[in-house]
Length: 369
Image 1 (cartoon, rainbow, N blue to C red):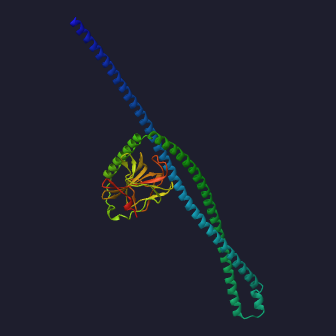
Image 2 (cartoon, rainbow, N blue to C red; image 1 turned 135 degrees about the vertical axis):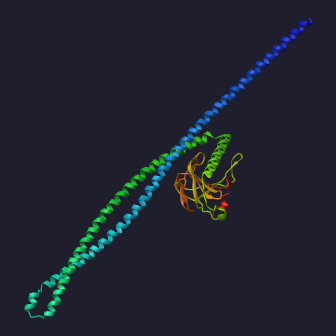
C-alpha cells in the first residue's frame, strides 16, 4: 500500500514537473519569438532609415549642383549687366561725339563755301597783294585738310558706334538667356528642396521616439568624430592655429542663435557647437585662415566643410546648401566657403558651427568677434 502511494506521488510530481517544463518552454519560445519580432522590426526600421538617408544625400547633392550653377549664372549675369552699363555709357558718349563732329564738319563746309566765293583768280585780277593771296591759299589748304580730318573722324566714330551697338545687342541677348536659365534652375532647385523637405520629415518620423532619436544622434556624432580624426591624420597644415585669436574670429554667418554649446539635445547628448539660423543661400565665411581638410556630405550634418588652422585647431561648418571649397584649398578669414542650407534633415535653414582644439570641442561664442 505504501509502495502504491509512493508510486502515485512520484507520478504526480513528474506530471507537475512535466507541466511546468512545458509551460516554461512555451514562455521561453514566446520570449524568443518576441525578441525575433522586435529584431525584425528594428532591422526593417534601420533599413528604411538608411534608405531615406541615401535619398537625402542624393537630394543634397543635386541641390548643391543647382545652387552652384545658379551662383555661377548670377555672377555671369552681374558681369553682363555691368558690361551693358559700360557699353550704354560708351554709346551715349559716341552719340555726343558724332553730334559735335557733324557740327564741326558743317562749320568747315560753310567756311570753305564762303571762301570759295572769292577764288584766287578773282583776287589776283583785282590786284590784291601777293602775300595776302599766299595767306589765303594756305588757309584754304588748311581748311580742306581740317574738313577731310573731320570727315574721317566722323566715319571712325560712326563705325565705333555701330560696333558698340552690336556688342550691346549681344550682351542683352546674353542677359536674357541668363535670366531664363536662372528662372529654370530656381524652379528645379525649389522642386528639389521640396523633395528634400519631405524626406527629412519622413526621417524625423522614423526617429520620433526618444530612444531612436538618441541612437541616431550618438551614431552621427561617432561618424563625425571618425571623419574628423581621419581628416586630421591626412592633413599636414603648418599654420599657427587660433590660440592668439580668441574673441577675434569672424562670425561664419550673421543670424539668430538657435542652439548654444552645451545645450541639451536629447537624453545625455548635448550640442558640441552652435546652430545659427540664417536665410538659405547666405554665404558662410571662414572664421579664420586655414586649409580645407573635409568637404562632403555626412549623415546628420548634411553638406559639411572642415577647415584646419594648424596646431590641432579646426572649425566645422554643417547643414550647408552648397560647398564652395574643396579639400586642399587654402582659405582666408572671411572668405566664402559654403552657402547656408538645411541639408542633413534640418527643419529650417541654419548653420552648424563647431570649434575643435586637439580633437576636443569648445564653446565657439567666446572665440567669435
